Amino acid sequence: MLRCPENHSPLTPVSEDVLKQLNNAIRAGWLVNRGGRRIDELIDGGLLRAEGDLLYPIVDDIAVLLRDEAIPISQLGVDRP
Image 1: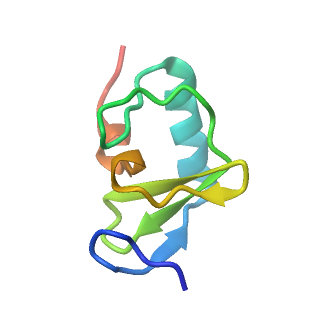
Image 2 (image 1 turned 90 degrees about the vertical axis):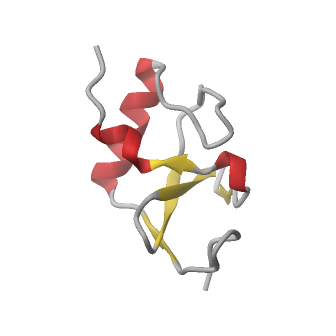
């Protein structure tokens, strides 16, 4: 079982709906990771930590379990132009 590298909570695969929202935000150019870097490449999937606040992206079928690469999910609830 994969766990969050920061707080060791369980990670679960993100739903297709959330994945679609994330990739739409990436296409629009406004999604940033926890390190403050804008995400330019679409993701294949993601692992959501138990609290539901952070998503670790899956890129090229590899889970990127690095603190600064995590994506704060709260960005999806923010209105964008």
